[in-house]
Image 1 (cartoon, rainbow, N blue to C red):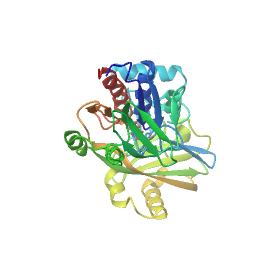
Image 2 (image 1 turned 90 degrees about the vertical axis):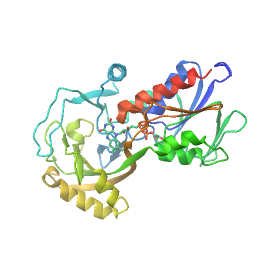
Image 3 (image 1 turned 135 degrees about the vertical axis):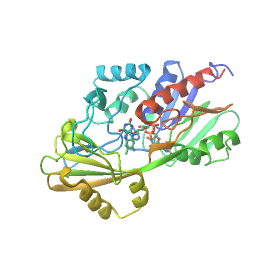
Image 4 (image 1 turned 60 degrees about the vertical axis):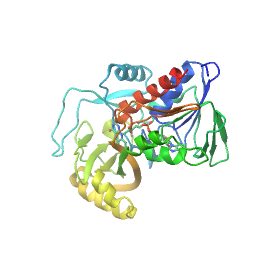
Length: 329
Ligand SMILES: Cc1cc2nc3c(=O)[nH]c(=O)nc-3n(C[C@H](O)[C@H](O)[C@H](O)COP(=O)(O)OP(=O)(O)OC[C@H]3O[C@@H](n4cnc5c(N)ncnc54)[C@H](O)[C@@H]3O)c2cc1C
């Protein structure tokens, strides 16, 4: 099949990888539909608002190591979607720990970046894909709301354990070798607590404490970060504590995490919300930047579980997925 004939693609997931894959294919003249189950775009680049505060509760910041990603970040900065936040954060004892490498944030919260990337694309949110069929050289997807999307090619960007469930939801059967490779990928969970405060928190400038331990991994101050009018903190539990307490009662988790945060809370807590990320950080990744699981009809898996983790890895993986499809001739 030539590129002229194979010119439509459905992408599951409007996180940074899905949106960059969509942009890559659109620029090559493909018709692209992106479906996401979330209320908005961004996936794990997530910002929530409540009580006058804004809280990044998934990714807190991102770094850029490769020249390719540095170029993308420079474009996002020029477009007003991203800003440099700092050159390092306080350590567990609250001491400054700058290392000279820029840490970036979304301009008005992490979702500013995916919102910017989604402009001009056909992105449909609130559409959870519940069935995938791949007969007769075409993909056919059905969502919970009854929407049907079809395409010559399919890209799946959900965290791999979810991706495997999605592609196995209909008559289609993934080739054995691809399934085996993907079954090796794993993630850690993360419990993320957002707390609106009645005054300044105890988090030191520039607004983050990188603990990297158990039971706490991170405490961020969303006002010092520059994304929230009202004072409010985001607390991330470490992977082990999150796994052990993932299903615990919300009030219990909240009380325990606030207790661990201690003086870093620094003010009275007005209200809280909890996000339970079943798939947050990749613990076992796939070695390639994406996986072309089969060529006809084309099926590509990509996202932060491929080659490199985090926002940078997910972005590069999205671009690799678009290139992989453009290369199937
Ligand atoms: C708590 C936490 C902290 C983090 N901290 C950092 C950090 O500080 N720095 C950093 O660089 N990275 C961090 N990350 C990781 C970073 O957020 C991810 O690597 C990156 O955002 C992944 O992008 P992605 O496009 O691969 O996946 P996602 O953003 O997960 O996108 C996948 C999308 O698929 C959608 N989806 C899933 N199933 C379906 C379905 N059935 N139908 C339709 N849509 C579906 C989801 O809604 C989601 O939007 C953190 C993540 C978490 C959770």
